[in-house]
Image (cartoon, rainbow, N blue to C red; front, side, top):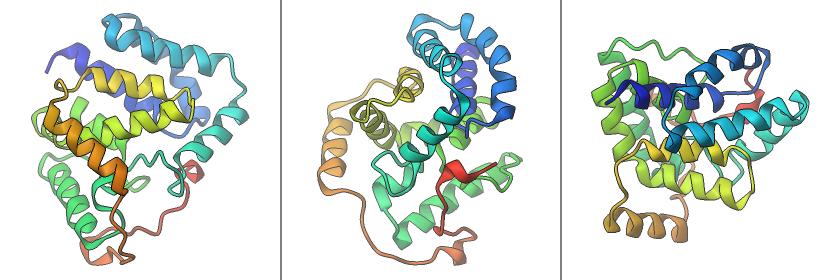
Length: 209
């Protein structure tokens, strides 16, 4: 993976976090990184930065919660798209968690390990090879998230456009899988995931401070 790809993924990871004062303070540094990116990743990220600079913070925060709330169509937790709230999702989340632990990556406690921003950060500055594999394995979910944001006319679609530009070219098999997931929706089976060291009792991610 090139340094520019890693930089684009790290910038996207930061921008997909909750838009608080800490993120706003980091925007100048992010903008400096984005300036050096190739057009396929730099232009969409710059478009989102322009949106942030021209929108009141409270409005951005309100939009973030409305868009990425678990009850919405733009869930940022990758395993939710394929496994819903089922036992299979618990196993899938555990795989992410184990990959991070094996790489010595400090996940922290703010997000589940399958959150888009966490996976991107791991792929950028953690074990890049394992991160690349996780992104490739879940690219159907990433494309579905991107399409959902486009339908909602959310400015966050620019960030996902940049992420998609770093992924392998989508194949007919992946496109078929995306169509199947989009048509059927995530599996439904309300269970606790506590035995796997995680929980699906999640507040809207905009609530993180």
